[in-house]
Length: 270
Image (cartoon, rainbow, N blue to C red; front, side, top):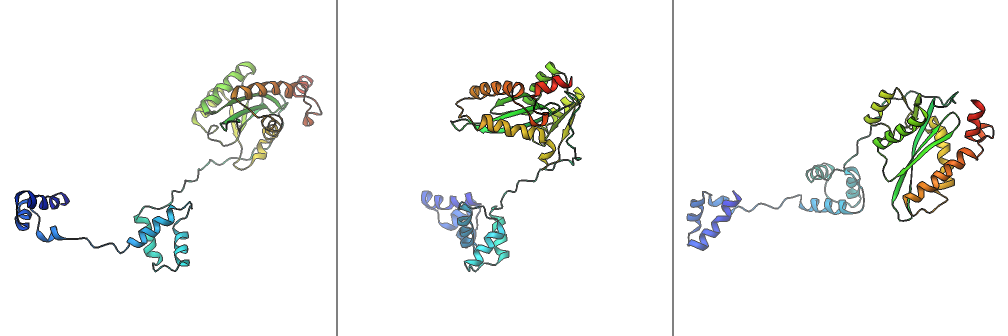
């Protein structure tokens, strides 16, 4: 309809048709051609809503209604709600991730190596501001730091690759104790654990104490390495971390191991 209405003045100018003739030619009534839409009664409200939502504020519908009432604007809450939704200004609410129910898993010290490994991630950044992550893995029996993988991204496939390398050297653990991070919840890791007959012992959400061995290790690694150096590159992080792992496992006494190092405790219990 709008296209046909636009043809009327063109026919009048180019061919000298009268308004009646041009409207009849394009099959548009003269009343439709002359119609001028009334300005919306919500124009002022729409402008006010756009102005409020453009500010660096994350205000939802209810807060905007309260704000307009404080400003003594004439619009009632129903009208504000209707126009707010018509303009599509609703805040996007990220749905809450539903985690499967977890059974409490008491933190029991294993009686031998390879019975239980603990895994966790840490984050830090280089001096350039580039972020990186670490995947920390320890044996709960003697708190031995098995490995720390360092990179900018460590998806589930990378976790599996690291585990395969460790298992090739040490054998498969009976269980892996880990939290509910997306990498540890991935289907690929669950499938790998099923194929290798390894139990994934997920802790309860919001219960880091159920993974206390790796949490305590993370604190030591944070104090001795991540907070102690200003890293220029990932290679520097890896080099310093590998040297620290040797020192941690070989020379650093552990209070929970009766003052022994992880290697000494493993030899004593063998």
